[in-house]
Image (tube, rainbow over all chains, first blue to last red; front, side):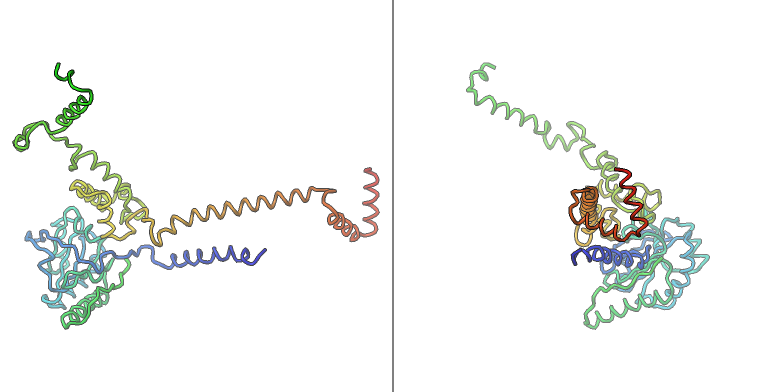
Length: 193
Length: 194
């Protein structure tokens, strides 16, 4: 057998096996985020109190957009983290807005009354806003910079450390932009559900 | 009518074409149309919420998109709430006049390319389309080559006297390796069979 024939099968099999091995090391449920670095889709809707609110009203601050539902158990786990975020950061620099996912006003209001928190949550009839954000389930959280660009996305319940690092990153990017430094819409890692 | 028959032959088709053109034009004036006169609009020809064309395109696009909840099913097949809402969004966008390609692009923009059940054949995705074909061609070539080798070996093995001197030498060397007793038995057996 000539030399090239001897190496033909290993030469074809090794890269293929390496590719398969690489695929196995990646979490199957982790999906790339298509929205990071792009402009956050605008939305407007009724709040749990019946008022109207929109994302545009929060332009100028770092905004945490959290998709949640009262029937979602991980959302309950995550809720104290959002409570801490609402308490920790001043309203003029960081805003928090919830988008209610496939749920009704009554259940969502009961959830907020039971677990606390007075930040704005917007109803999403037809799941139109969630689809506009490429949401696959709840909870999912997007960090939107003051210029309206999505700076990061987290799938699944967030820890305080995960939220803080994402918000701090967006705040420091804002500060750099304000002082004339270069700001690039870098990607922050995405958590797995 | 006599005037028509009196015309030169080349004029008749021109007149007929003019008549057909007139028939093809709207029967009512724009003012009459605005007033609601004329024929009722053909709803099947205009994209609308319930038009059969939109229904067909909705099924087509929904069958090409992956359900984000089920992952292994299309938006059309999935019975999840999100898939149903996505179908409503697809229908709504098509009804507003977007093309199927534009609706697909919308979902790719929001979810990423994984939302397509069939990835676009470009860049690294080409491997998905090219590798199976290469494997088929390569595998077929290997099988044919091996079959040819086996058939050639068979002919050589069954060649008998046509095998040539090398085969005779091989048999002679095999006989040399036999013990005296075995060789006598073999020679006796061969003699008996003759």
